[in-house]
Amino acid sequence: GERGVYNFAAGPATLPLSVLQKAQAELVDYRGSGMSIMEMSHRGKEFDAAIKKAEADLRALLAVPDTHEVLFLQGGATTQFAAAPLNLCASSSDPADFVVSGSWSDKAFKEAKKYSAASVAWSGKAAKYTSLPADFGAIAQNPDARFLHICSNETIHGVEFKDYPEPKNKSGVLVADMSSNFCSKPVDVSRFGLIYAGAQKNVGPSGVTIAIVRKDLVGSAQPITPVMLDYKTHADNASLYNTPPCFAIYICGLVFEDLLAQGGLAEVEKKNQHKAGILYDTIDASGGYFICPVDKPVRSLMNVPFTLAKGADLEKQFIAEAAKEGMLQLKGHRSVGGVRASIYNAMPLSGVEKLVAFMKDFQARNP
Ligand code: PMP
Image (tube, rainbow, N blue to C red; front, side, top):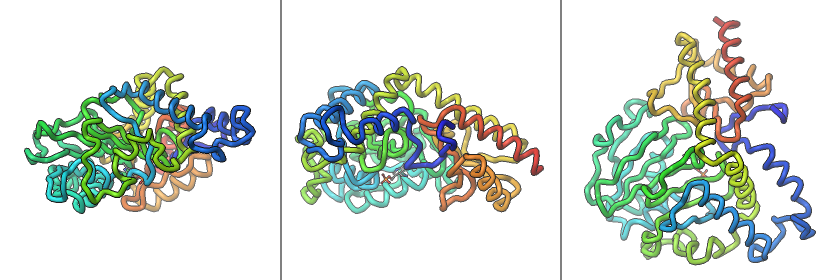
């Protein structure tokens, strides 16, 4: 790539070169202020303009309706595993449903059990998290659940929702952990009570977590809710209740500008479909040499896990040789092994093209 390597890491992940260059140019002297944006008051006019523009651009990108707040939070998506039930359930005996489609939704479910009567409405565990409910009717929803939680893209297992279930409880809401496919395609935000996402895959550095929450759901958190986990705290203070992760928010703002300049999320989705398409095609055309275990209709456009039929030793060799050729971080998550290519928005097409050429060559050399 332009930087000599392609970074296939799952997160923190590659960022657009143009964003890094803009940040570099502004780093020491932010727009004539004589200071870096990370040295400024979060209540000063420069940062105020930066966070307002980041929010406005994100609203434009995702067409976030006025019914929803956009919040810039800390603590990672992991903190939202607790914040969701704390804000959406009146007490720890209030029911909540979870679709457990991989490691991340399983973690969300386990954390939510502390603050709600969480239950598993569907699990992909028996099929090693390679599928989603083929028919959303197969999700055994509790009619009283306050929310139905999904992980829209399982970063480790590579399973992605292409459409979304409706909560059975008419006064319940759909909640999605979108950490690893946030802003990778258009989403009808109005279908969700709460969307949350750590920034460090598709939209920025680690340190900031974005929550998009329906306004009528804000303000009824459980009494035990820490002030920092109560969405009302942040909604009432425009994400400036305490010191926010200023630099991370600023970088997200640059990424949002870049995504808008690309033509918005419909254009971005087309690019992502094309990139993922050539990678899955290469796997599927390898005659069983490379194997992606995920059901075809729910294969992730962002994280592509695969194995080599010839075993773990050859996988090791594959990953090492790829690294020598400048394709980095292709090792699968330590919990599942194998290979994983994370190809978020900022992975150029040329990176995926280089990877598939390498795969074909590797297969020819190691039949
Ligand atoms: N959910 C998903 C889908 C993720 O991929 C991750 C991080 N890999 C998390 C949650 C946890 O995010 P964080 O590290 O920001 O807490």
